[in-house]
Image (tube, rainbow, N blue to C red; front, side, top):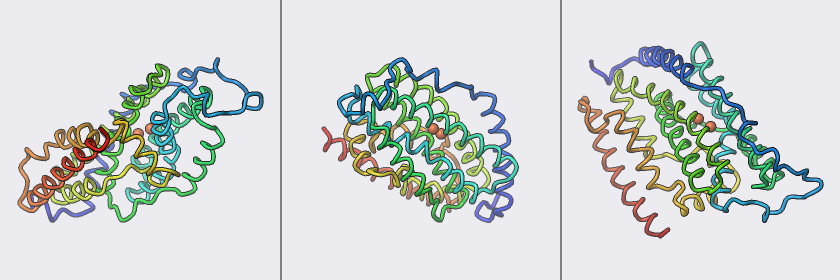
Length: 297
Ligand SMILES: [Fe+2]
Ligand SMILES: [Fe+2]
């Protein structure tokens, strides 16, 4: 197949067909769960009787920074829903998937907010102000096309899974760890769906898919960049080793690139040239990741 000449309609048709299968698999695997089962309501106290103070939290500042960032990202799903539906279309199976995905992420936001509020991990007024600020900023997919969106969200869902999981392990709080493990299981299924779509894109149009992948690996940033205090909090989370460039490389980029067999597959020359650029980008990421770890040590 002269892959560089694939018509966009053909690619879109192929991705939609793959999404139908992937969505069916997702619905089969996804389990219903209920936020109230994961929240220790017995610990709750009325804020009018006992106002919030920072000292009430049993979580470290690193863990609080991480959960707050992750929660605000969950909150902002309507922004991502809007951005992705503008790129992929809001019809048929895309509509079904995007609505379902948004509903699942909404559950994560509900559970995390309740947990943080009941356990007095964060100031609920600050959390609410930040939710308003984050959602009022929405999300702009920029000039991403469908392939770039799929490449980006594959990485982002895995990054979210890893961030939740590592935060739970780091928290020394069995209740939070259990909740974050539950959420991570959902994030894994989201990642699997987008990863499948990107695999389909690689089969149909490897040149365009490799270009999209390269662009998104180079420019990857968590979607929370519009969240108040994002840079400061992300730095705290990175210094703690919960999510830094090394984690991103080892636990997000490597498994995805391995799954897609990026460095093993036969590619047409134009895509192969992109792959060579990707290899250079990865070496540079390795170098920066080692430097970041050395600074944090
Ligand atoms: Fe989520
Ligand atoms: Fe997700």
